[in-house]
Length: 164
Image (tube, rainbow, N blue to C red; front, side):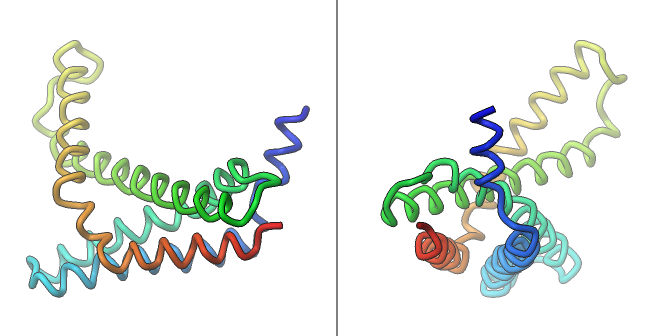
């Protein structure tokens, strides 16, 4: 019962969840777009796909990151709230965006994989996912700099200022 109560208190209001998801998703997509634009990267279609992936990852991550940050900073000072928000928003956003990337990567290569639910397929599934996560770590994380990092600092500061 106590866990359920704490979780209920940690959840964002519907307004905060929707507005925060929209703003956070926009900020993450804008960060990716800015970096890709400065790098003169690929074609406009591919840039849109990457920006959409980052925006969707950020939008999904916001309410989860908010809840985690509230759980970690419950009844503590502003410094703790800032650190909890910084860590929560950062880790959840990167993790969910990497997961979305891995799912898209897996769906592309599924055409050449063995029949589903065989041992060969299981190995292909696991290793394709691991390669996708590695690729995201090497190529995708840089798209959060500098814009995403600035947005992360701003979001954590805003969260800390709202903490009691």
